[in-house]
Amino acid sequence: MIEPDTLIARTVALQQVLCDGDYTGKAEVTVTGGSPPYTYQWTTENNDTGTIVENLSRNIYTVFVKDSRYRSESLHKRCTAESHVNIQSPNGIVATAAVIPPTCNEYVDGKIELTIGGGVAPYRCHWENGSTDKDRVNLTSGEYSVVITDNNDCSITERYTLTNPAPVIVDLGNDFTLCAGQQLTVKDKNIQENMSYRWTDGNNALLSAETEFTVSAAGTYKLTLATPEGCIGSDEITVEQSNDVLHTDFVVASLIPRGKTIHAVNIINTNVDSVEWILPDAAFVSENTAEKTGISFSQTGEYAIGLIGYLGKCSDIMYKTVKVVNPEEIEEYADAEPFLKRFIVSPNPNDGTFTASVELREPSDYQLLLYNESGYLLETKEIKNCDRENTLFTRNELTTGVYYLRFVAKEHVSTFKIIIK
Image (tube, rainbow, N blue to C red):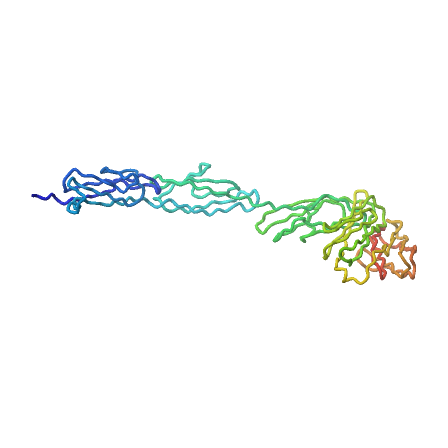
């Protein structure tokens, strides 16, 4: 009996995968020896049984071949052969990008810089706007996409987002009107760090580089903020000047017990159209009139209480701080009427001759001190043991401007603004 030649199977890759992830591979097996006919069994997903298999992905595949003499008995198991084929593909195309957003809000200086690898070089790029450059420049914020194709015509699509930096928002609040002789400090309502400040007037002349600016005259005022990168934001206000004289003042105890109702009393001594109390959210309000407000606090701490006076188109505001402590920390506490019941200058404005009218809760010694706008003391008058007194000042040599008359007693201190024309 003549034995056939040894059964030999040989595989060859007819086509490798061109693009990573595709199923374009193709392989073939050829057999010699043994006793035809042959049967084939591939380790493909479909368990193919032909000599040629297609639609292969990247992998190592094995084919088992049996000839006609194959039996399951051990004697005939030698009538088999196997072979392996390696279907390969290039690594996938990999694109990394340096995405540089615009420097400032609505700027057109963003960039997308690509680095491409994998696949088979050279590469071609096609952006959503038709550009075939690898990198993009002079971009605004938005969505961008690119199709990258290698030399095997394999391609990937990448998408990038350039965010729009937040604008530099400056908020100086509403336009306002100054009362006669009034000064108000203006600043940005937002807390912004690492900014440069530039205050200018209506002619763009530099007024200050500080974070806030004190306005004392009618005009247009503009604040421009700039970031270290050069991003800019601005806001401006228009200030008018009134001839009305308004000096807001009120009295309230500076140290009060928790849970005790206390009163803040309006002692505005100039003409006023209306007033408004500004009370913290933590305050329980039991009374609220133009003359006084009754409040209490359930928690200890420091709280700011304010009063706004309105006269014509102008207003004046004053804040005072009260400290709330536990009741045992205050030995005696009495919420009596204010010590200074009346402090007014008339006429105001004046030519340097005016009368200061003072009314107190009880007789006391006090001083009336006249200062100029620079804080220089011009005159002092001593009043002894009085509860109601009219004191005449005659200073006709004073020039036009703002002056301050200060009431000083052991129990209370108050300042009145005087306009001399």
